[in-house]
Image (tube, rainbow, N blue to C red; front, side):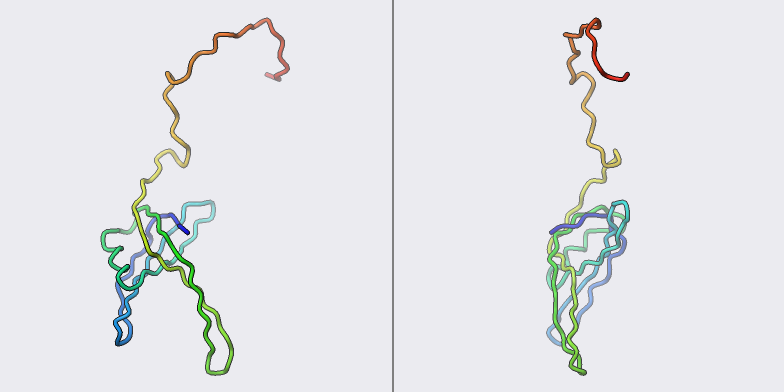
Length: 124
């Protein structure tokens, strides 16, 4: 799966436990009618992938959804989800507001078979 948006925040690399587990979080703001702020975590050696990116930069992140089950001390089962990134790449911001580029006017041939005397049913 992939998500695309602008970088809102890049966290610092955190280390946990004696095994040296590393995690780094990034927040992406999507570009849609209702923008979403989506936190993605990069773990272990993937934390270094974020070193060359900056806040405000448009990116595309390849992600995996992860789910965990945990039983608390009271015996209740809880479920947790996370979004884990494994690749990130810069994308070019679209200057035309999401519209595909317009071909130049000389790419169109003029219509040569028009007969203005023919009746059509168009209302204009």
